Each structure stands twice: as structure tokens, then as C-alpha cells.
Image 1 (tube, rainbow, N blue to C red):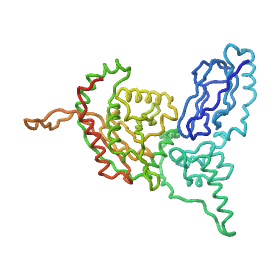
Image 2: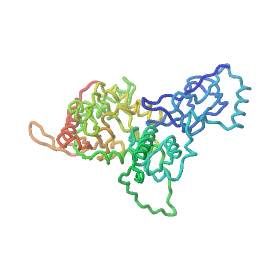
Image 3: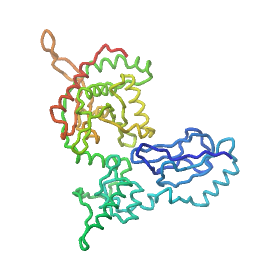
Image 4: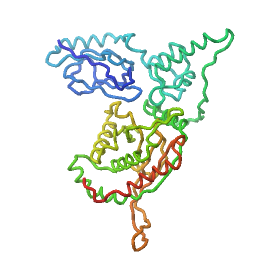
Length: 433
């Protein structure tokens, strides 16, 4: 009987392992090509792994919450047409009567066995592998909290823990005989005392919400935030979109929202002001060559993710619309690849989609600025004409830019924001689709 091995894919350049968070199939199930087999989680993204072949699930090699190295076989598919139903049935019964054995060389202790109440006291997220190493090496949660993470969003990785143990051991060996070596310390995070009533409901944060919380706190601690605000006249864009949106969808097969127009203006302004298309590394400034604009997307779960439009300055409105709509749909259906959320150099978040007029967004590290767009509203405004000023109804929108004051001063931040507004206000109302 021919079989096909399902291996743990490499979900990003620096990803060496992933945690199995869900199995959608069991032994004996029939699967078709592209059917989801399992869901995995890494430090970068959650993804569903589809079946590349038709057949029957012959074997599942790892349990739920197992941490599996890249390249390991996670399941075996008996190819359809050659699979024997009797054999499949026998293997299914055998798998149900004999618990799955995890190979120590390939997988760390499952999260369910190493999770303890102590980790709930920490505000940081730790992967099952990091928790396992910490337990085996008797590293306390307080010690883990002092380790500087090198992973995405400051996440502590396996290598960070091993380096900590190595340095800790060297420090102990070099210390005087009676000297007490104290663990690294950092300013503790203040915890607010919360009273709980009998009718209150307590719910544990899900994994993504913990990541978002850690990332937001880290960003505010790392970057001194300053926010500048301007109001832009969107009248030309509103009139143009109302006139061409049906023709645009008919021609390109894409819904025309305001976000491609915002992204186009931002990409142009980033080319004009490369100091905003940058990152900070210690006392060094990294000016990014590419203009990769992230678009914040709200998920059905209430969480947030930021897929990235690569080379946004090199795309027309149709290309931007296709990328934005495609990535938004992938995000809401949990289909984003790790590459889709990496490499961003600037972020846009649209408060207007929730009918909010203004907001002060938090910078998406390691970027140095983020733009928030508010809702577009009709307002009376003074209009300058050759024959004098007059009052008219105009479509107005607030733009707010939060930026890292370490390298973006008020002059740069304010000029960049004004340039975005200028591009929007100068939009050609007769532009062809």
C-alpha cells in the first residue's frame, strides 16, 4: 500500500519548530486534496496545514500540544485507490487502544504536562518548549521574565534560554567561593489589584491576545510616542469612488474601498520622507530600502493582525486593492503565511471602519511610525474661490500619526503627515480606473 508522509513545514526563515494546536482528522478518516489536516502555531503565525493528496489517514504521530521540529513526519496518508479499508479500520482500532508515544528526540514535553499556575502570573507568553526547558533546569518564572527575547515581538526562544543557562553557569564558575550570584533583575511590572464580584465572568486570554498585549506594552516601553493630527479634505476621493466603484469591480473583480487610496498616498510620502521608513537598532538607524505597508485587520475573534503589502510604492490602485482584499480575507480565514506578516516598514490602521473619527495608535515595533485614518464625515468648511471665500459642504477626515520621538522629530513627523494629506486632497477626480 503506497503512503504519503505529511511533514512539519518550515513556517519562516527562523522557525525551527511548531506546536500542534488542533487536529481536524483522526486515523481512518478519508481526506481530499487541500482538506485541512491540522493547525500549528509558531512564534510568528498560526496556520492550517492542508493535505496535498487524496487518501485515508493511516497514522498520526504526534498528540495535541506537541512541539514538533521542522521536517518531522506528523502524519501518514494512505493514498486513495490503494488503501485497504480493512487495514485502515484495524489501524484505527489499534491507535485507539494504544496511546500515541512521543519520540523524545523529536518533541518536547506537551504543554499540558508542563503548564503550571506559576506561568499565569507572568505577563509574557512562553512557548511549550521554553516552559519545558525552564522546568527541567529549575528556572523560575521570575528569572524567565528577566531574559531578553530575540524572537518576534521580543519573544523568549529556546536559544535565549540556553544562552541564559550558559552565561549563568559561567558566572557561577568565575565567582568567588562565598559570593552569592543573584539572577538578573529588572523593574517589575506593576500589577493592579482587581476585585471580583460574584456575578463577574473570568476568561483566560487566548494565545493571540497575549501576544498582542505583550507587543503593545513593549512598544510603549521602547518608543517615546508622539502623535500629530491633521484634517484632510476627502471630497474629490469620495466623489470619484462613488462614480467608479462599480466599473472598478467589473473590470478588476475587486471591491474598491478607501484603503488602496490611503496606501498609495502613504507609499508616496514614505519615498519623500525616508526617515519615517526606518527602524532603530540601539544607537543605529536603519533606513529601509523597500516600502512595505502593513494594514491592521480586525479578526472575527476580536484580535488583530497586520498583513503586509510588499513594494507598495510600485503598485497601482488595482494592484493595491487586490493585495489588500486578498490579505484581509486570508487573515479572517486564518490562511495567512508567515511571509505575509513579515517585513513591514510602516503600518496603517483604519479607525474609520468602526465610525471613530480620531485615535492615537501604538507603533508596531520595530517600525517608527503608524498612521490612523478616521471616518469620513460631511462638514461645513470655508472654500477659497477666485471671487472670494464661501461656505460649502466638504467630506473631511482626521489623520493621526504616532511616531517614535527617538529619531522622528516633530518637524519630520508633522511634514510627513501633511504630505499624506496633500496627496489625498490633490487626488484627480477624473482619474481613470
